[in-house]
Length: 427
Figure (cartoon, rainbow, N blue to C red):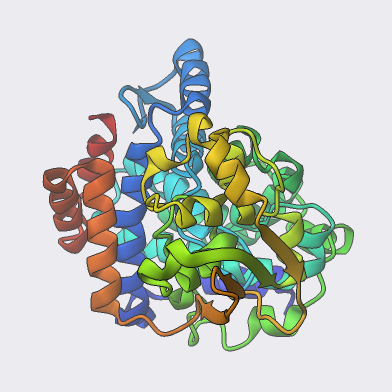
């Protein structure tokens, strides 16, 4: 059985075989995704892409973040871009990608277009995010290191799987959809720190919609093109990608963001948070991080708020100065150039350290009295579901208001019609 056949088979997993634990984590990611999408509705990149949707017009099949409706493919593009505009959405470190922003906008657009029920929508989203992580594992770290953005590449396959499931595909159609989206899957890390990064999430969601709808309309592609995609894009780790697929749900290990910046910086911020009031006595910081992050979030002298979201030195300077890194307005152009913060930034050294895990960071703090302190954190440290839910609800309330956050959570918990959830995007 080929990789494509195995993934197509998984995408059609009977709903009764989806574990409650995975469904619960998916529900939290849906709430988190809604908050991120609504918070990103007025970002410049969202306005640009939404303007394109408005200019093109078309059938009002699905709701857009910020108001209006558009064809499903364009809605996925707009909503995927908006939800990643602030880089505040969930991350999975198994493949270093953002699963929800690629898959959920696609699934929601198709669910609206087909008038699917809430259960079918959430099941399709869960299948899609799990499949995207599996494809990301198959593509491997080399794929990411040579410059591809896993959110966009692996995410497109998860989006296509979610869409195909909602469209009622059989195994042959699902395989064809995965093969066709291989021609579209794209996205480069070169866009990090620019509007192009959130756009990568939008194109993944849009590509999933497009591929599935073309298959539904009768297009006949090479269904094995997924294997060719791997051959040309460093796909190699088949064993881990298919390990216990269908019984082991890797998506459950997804990490939600509680700082408004690149997830690669969060372990450092969590570690520094343990310092508490003593942060005022920190003279210098040496950051030990896995070398893979040095090409992702180690901008040394960012001069914009967006650039600060990808800078160990900038975020730790903000934390040293007492700024709340969970707040969106902390990452402003004004603060990025503030002389006192620039001075603090220059007291921070970042080192690549193979002994540190990809999800962890170790800080060596030189205190004003000459003493030294060591603190560390790993994002894979267990976080009970109820603790995670409380943190996500607090974040959602901050991003979209307490009343709307509670309403969205109720829609998700009750598995309300996707159109009810989608209409919240317009407010």
